[in-house]
Length: 260
Image (cartoon, rainbow, N blue to C red; front, side):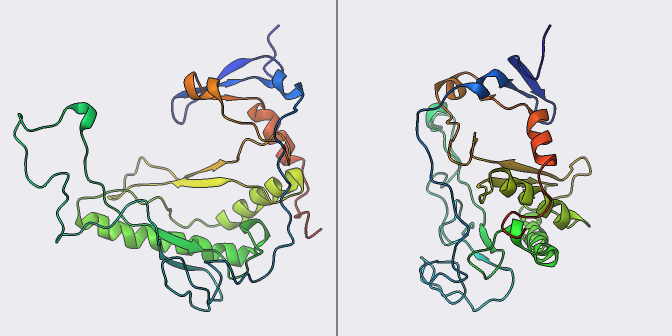
């Protein structure tokens, strides 16, 4: 009889319409490959070599103010640049006739936008998981303000998307609870990439707020699960089932291991 907790199966994600191959039996395989050094928590409160600490010079030459809370500033090396009316894009200097249009393989279109950095806390050694609820609420307010400010600019240019979100009561508590569980999982600061989806501008009532947390596919605090040929050429694959992962997180202590 098929057992989803132990047998290979394909899992459907109704949020994005994709499938993931789940192979729970692979959790028992041995590992003789690369081993990562576990991250410690003995970081300094202030690091004079950090480009984001208060009073330090950033890579672009700007000097950070002696901030005492959450701050935001333009990214020194953004992925996209603001549109410039004085510098028309060389990719599309004027409308092209059908005979002038490039082949689809060489088609290119200009992209513009704005990128901002949010420093959550002046202390170099703190992450969201170890910040207080009021401090996390300040981060949420900064995200909300960027969402509204950048959204107003987008509305003047025909609309677009800001990858931040509206403030929600209780959200700081939910974030802290989840991130404390992540750190407690291997009793080490847990690395991840977090993304947020919400309504574009103009507002779309069909949109809903949701978070994405992408950890580096760790099997343990020192062993990564590398994305290799099968995942790159066939389909997404994971070893741990969602139910097993959720059960592990729910069973963890609610207090951060470094503060217990």
